[in-house]
Length: 478
Image (cartoon, rainbow, N blue to C red):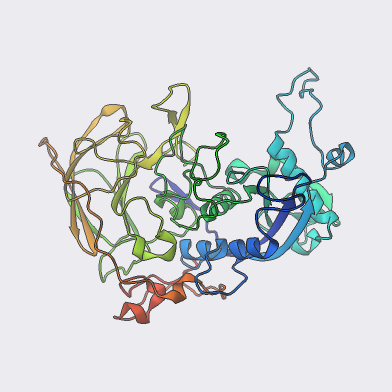
């Protein structure tokens, strides 16, 4: 792995086997009768794997292919349907810890498994009981099946649109269990039966290597619909209210830090915020280095491991960016800890709670300020004009950042200045040409080619994998 500009990069490439488990209830519900989920097996297989082959089908496999530029996705291992029938003997078999005794032998439930951990342990075991052979996925023959060899997604009726996974992809909370003649250590993601497409993708992202990090902050939904790692359901969980938009399929990519983390980002220029400079950016997923512009992202670094990354996002750049909550230039603030991850900082809503120091910045009186509640994590693009940038603690960077739209490009300039900022509200970019229907369903990934850059063609509709301008950065292995 290589570290640069606060990003530790790990290449997630190829196709990872995904086991889909449908955990059927043993009680009636308002959604479905006994033994049924909200949809049937074929429906869930299509939402996860795109099994119907119908043009316009939107699914997790296609999403990750688009997000990663063809470098990574999941592939179907199997779909297994099981009943959520639990008994004391079954819970003992799967190693559930609910004895009310802590590691020091004292009476305490602090070390007991959470309800979701119990569900993940039970689900993993029931798949083997239903005939799934885990040993087929011990790809290196070491007698152990790990998450990178087989990832597991369980869809259940325990929620309609929520989810839960091991944070950071760490399956140690589940432990390992001998099944099918091997030691099964794979992590499990849970998702509710009427989840948005992005919720399935969000939960699985926690099982990537290394696992993704939630960025929504305390009760804030920072940068919602600008990154996969923000909130992915339309109503606050725990309200008891029905989903606003069950089974929604609108899409949006990860933030630039996560894309770089997995080796899925386009070209980035990183410079210290000193002196004077400028850079032209092309919209994300429409990169044609040296033709329209050189870079997709510009990162300006400051003191104390702080940085701001600028990127241009437009809905027409990908079928899976159609759900973006803002279009145009986004400014992402980031502060990195000693592990090269976004630092944990106090919430502005409750000082006893925490946020992750990676979120979009909205201008407040043309000032971008990570310590201003009206700026932190608000879903707003930057319009034409100049902006003053603050670092944490309200420290003025001493620089003005100028945004100049030159559609389809955006120029970002910076210079030291004590002048007041002057900006206009962001206006959406002109609509791009229609997305070709062929792009709505991406083909299964072939063997990935070596990195190369090329001009696909001058007519965008004749070069649909390259986005609305007919120019692209094709799949690369590094």
